[in-house]
Image (tube, rainbow, N blue to C red):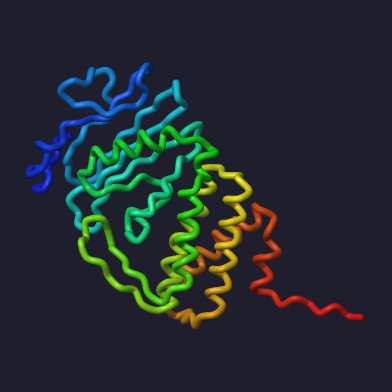
Length: 262
């Protein structure tokens, strides 16, 4: 805990006077650090440079909360939380972070660095969810957002929350790479959350089909090192489709159908 705070934290730390607390009567709540009972405090805001993490368990609610930060490293800076209930990951389908290249996984609650109040509020909000709310309209909207970019030839990306400007990525191949990253992340999140909702699975399966069709319609240079990202996504899609009894559909994209002999 003795590491030096970053310069940015020194400028704004006076604004961070809230903490995340828990009591059996209130559940999770945000309070001023000046009035919160010490025994109810779970997380205090900090500005420690470098990697930091803390995990707490709330047995009564079968809830696990882990916060991880890595301040002071430019685009590698991050601030995130991982929330699980009954050993299942609670997913975050916040589309405001969709086009952030780093720190934008559905498996974590990602916020701008030092945005402690926002992170605490996201933890409280997502912890109220259940298996059924994992497949809410926001999750379907997130899947549709990935689907939409497959029709685009350019997208605008931020490398991280702290980068103010966006960068244009042009070309169907580049867009397919970005979609591959999103699909792989979505599938892994689906597995960690143990999602079995049929509509969610069907929508994800439709997305996988559209991406498979997309990569067959564009030129791919196998000498390009970035192509390994497509390979990783293909592996994830294959595993997902096999688990959901769609393995033959996957093979159909790569193995010509045999003609019936009379």
